[in-house]
Figure (spheres, rainbow, N blue to C red):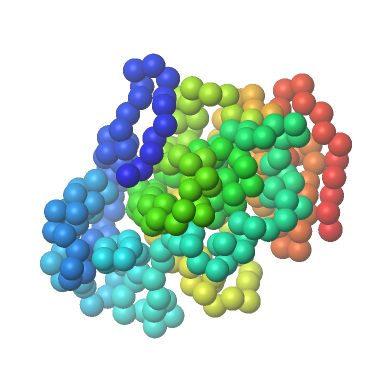
Length: 285
């Protein structure tokens, strides 16, 4: 079940109301329940996501597929995209990254000195990989994802991860909202220490698996929410810092220069200190 956390006063909502509001978008992707999946579960999911349920998978085109093991997104009839997209926080890569050193760029960019479990808003959660990493390093993470199907994939991955006792503490620090961050950010009842933005941008990689994942995600999520207003809204919240993930040589988001940047080989993190917060510029090449 998608967790919404508390919103201010009478603005508190359950996850189905929020998903329903997002389903007003035109979504033409069918949903198919594989043999063995309960019909009621498939019908409920299709209704919540605003998708049409089909009794048999199409021969080509995009498809949301519910199996006994997980929820997937795939595109049929395309030899270049023969796999499927799903969220798995229990695989080797996710577990290795969650144990990564606190020297990792994202952790360094987001950390708040002297605070054990600062509240971080991941306002563009996507498949939740960065949010999970941050939660594994002690942050309390509120994930917000605008695309209802992407959010459903993420929620399914979180649900399956809860079966592993070793991830219990990490998952206890994660909440998931579905909706527009521009609308949901002002509704949070606790002032966040950090707001994290990761606007999707093309990434070069030598891994065919990662390439396919990114292509499927970009096919599924058209990103009709412009990132520039989101940065302005995040800065207006008054958090200790706003962290933005950018291509290494890409322009500053919205033309707004950050307080400092942490640079890796292909990406960088632009850090915007909040009101009255001063940080020494740091660059890692």
